[in-house]
Length: 77
Image 1 (cartoon, rainbow, N blue to C red):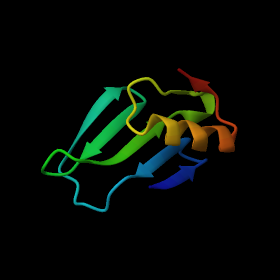
Image 2 (cartoon, helix red, strand yellow; image 1 turned 180 degrees about the vertical axis):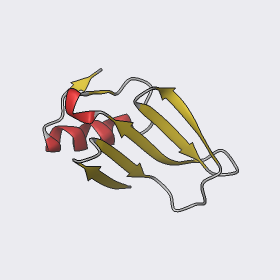
Image 3 (cartoon, rainbow, N blue to C red; image 1 turned 60 degrees about the vertical axis):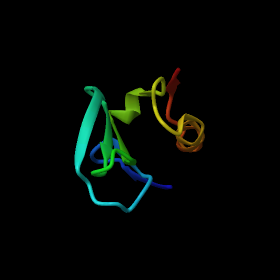
Image 4 (cartoon, rainbow, N blue to C red; image 1 turned 135 degrees about the vertical axis):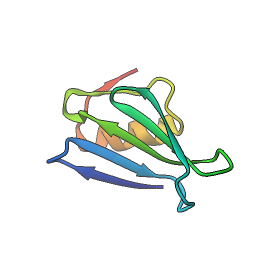
């Protein structure tokens, strides 16, 4: 699992797998899950992270919350 934080974009992308992107699904306007052709999660996109991140319904929630805490980003659970 690889975390990439872009302060200019106010976004975090979490790479779960190096499989090829097939489709994505928005959880809401600030959270998106990317999938490969067989439906496996390959990435998680979090937008507007400076205002905090809702972690409900996120895959790998514990790992995501740990990273957010390290970065000092507010968590809404």
